[in-house]
Length: 256
Image (tube, rainbow, N blue to C red):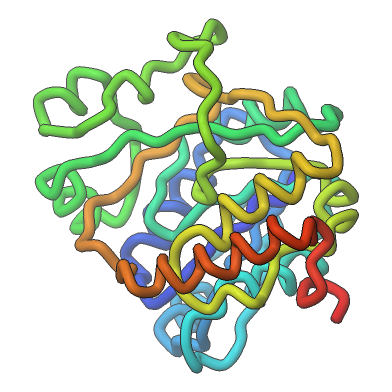
């Protein structure tokens, strides 16, 4: 089974869109974990009042700053699936998203996809509806979306160029992630910690990457930047220290 883990924080409208899109997947046999870096009563009330055609777990923790990696580790431990797929709480999956990852669930690789950047216009319309019925290429172009080519669904990738891991769209076997002790909880600022770091550590133990571009598609909802350059600089210093010390199995991860 696959576990789809959604990193969520204080945005029920976005969460409603994501869960609606997951309820309309072309595949079945997966679970969803809402991995909440906080304990928002609105989120709890929404989940309590809705039912979906898949098992759903809700992991939470006290809201005392950016601790995305900590709650991700909690969610990894809670996951019943042998293959984990990670998306962010501002990313809506295409109807064949889960099916694409199900096809690679036995691979011993880092499976990573890309994202379409939705415009403010499209985002506002979707958030008002709180349901997702898909977006055509024409919808994206006319609506002012960016990186529209990433939204073309095909089994033949439109580009073979290797790209870096995006924390908002990737998957891996659970045991491979546990092998490097999960996410490094030393990163307490947004940026780098949940993608650059995890990519480097997985590759350091010999795990190769596999592109899911144009197969595992997500639509990124428009919003203002939520991270600071200062926070990224702090994270980069931590990252460089890890690289210099060759610490690809983190000390502050699933196991402390």
